Length: 405
Ligand code: DSN
Image (cartoon, rainbow, N blue to C red; front, side, top):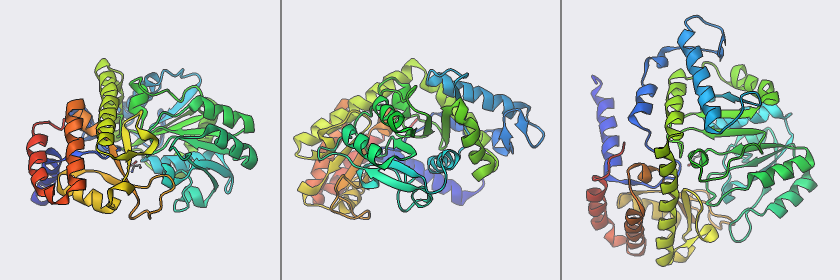
């Protein structure tokens, strides 16, 4: 690469990943095949519209591409193309959620969603997001034990009569009962939107229940457990296609990112392979091994453990704020993110929890043994901050043994 400044930053970022442990639950390392597709000639093409209904010339390959990737998406979730439609064009998850809400609802309609500090996402009706500004959010909450309380959600839904209910989160460590959500939505005639961004790889890998056929519309990003490029997609019941997809284009977006769609296609093919199923299983084994070991060190976990790829640690008994914990762990080469916990007494800038996820380290080939070692380092750093420099050296040496891709 001739651009030395950018080249050096790319190399520095590679080195940072190689020498550290990425425990950010929403990050992952896509394969070389995915990255090759992302860097392909499809980056050059404008393709406003839908396959075989475009505005510009030169479409013979992008039409085939978008059709093929759409077929792969439906196949990955075992969906019948007569009943379900897919849109691969949303540029990101937050935008896709907004497009869905604008497609299905009138402005100021009520939506029922998990409160952000309890694990919901900004784009799920948070006051800071247009989804919370343009619609009227009513929030549900986790119970005191950190679990979804379906009876309380049902009661609230019946009282409030929202037009749409959102299930699927960014910091919820347990399985989600999508069938139960669908029963609640049906009871009040609301749409069910499932945002499976965090768990799509687990669903396709067969280790988390699918939201199909229960949901009316699914939104997922493509770069988390699915291990594709940064992007998003929407799958909805065929009868909702017109309402939603016109909000993607021309409603909010211009040209789709065809290079991203190509890379999503590669990721979807990988995700239906036997190797990916094993990968999905290992993500959960790793997450549970990490949780168990942290508990042995006296860490309190929201909900007491995990069924999925993430662990949410409540730091309140550890005499350290989460901001300091994140910084301290990073100084030891362990990269995490501070996170709110249910009923958090802290602030969004310094909440009381740290979120840990295993998708990226599982991609590097780590297993339960390595998770136990990492839990030990986390405990050492949090309980004895003066050890951070020494642990950083150990982490660096260890981390370099595990290739990123
Ligand atoms: N920022 C992502 C996460 O970390 O969960 C969600 O958008």
